[in-house]
Image 1 (cartoon, rainbow over the protein chains, first blue to last red):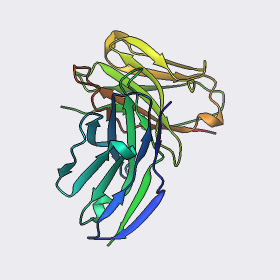
Image 2 (image 1 turned 45 degrees about the vertical axis):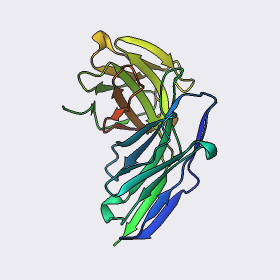
Image 3 (image 1 turned 120 degrees about the vertical axis):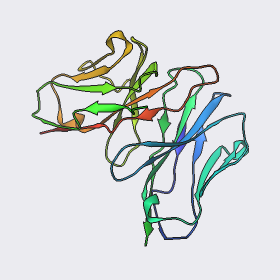
Amino acid sequence: AQKVTQAQTEISVVEKEDVTLDCVYETRDTTYYLFWYKQPPSGELVFLIRRNSFDEQNEISGRYSWNFQKSTSSFNFTITASQVVDSAVYFCALINQTGANNLFFGTGTRLTVIP
Amino acid sequence: DTGVSQNPRHKITKRGQNVTFRCDPISEHNRLYWYRQTLGQGPEFLTYFQNEAQLEKSRLLSDRFSAERPKGSFSTLEIQRTEQGDSAMYLCASSRLLAGGPYEQYFGPGTRLTVT
């Protein structure tokens, strides 16, 4: 069985603040892949990052960074110096190596950046 | 590279009617997925194709739902005898199948279905 938990339902920050979105996952597979997607008000899911289970290196892309910790089954996402355009629902998701390779999504975190 | 496209973007139908949605994936992507998203939830897997073969269906896909991908290109999702509980956003995604995968899935804009 697999599960993705995003405990933060909604977060509000003031522009230029840093914010971290939490993601905790469960899976029985030893090989799996983790993802973050952004869903802005327009509704279209936008791919942000893919991480495989044997690569625990953290990644930074501009104002975005991701912290993968296998020991705590977490894959957290930090936005530095948040901007109003970052306002969206953010989904963490998991793909197992076995099976359909479909995405298992968390329930999402709605981020509102206040100008 | 054009992205994934879906038509129609919105569909309002009366309970009991049949509806069909279309998805055109990114051209070189051989995997195509259908998901359903209800308000306040993450997308849930319905079914997927590898080329023209439908390889897996979720328990969510009742026998009123059918999907096809003729010739491994575009796909259609049909819902027969719609019910109010079918109201949701139907999302299509496509991805490559290569060694080192599975790779990220790219999503279309979705079809929002409202059953009255």
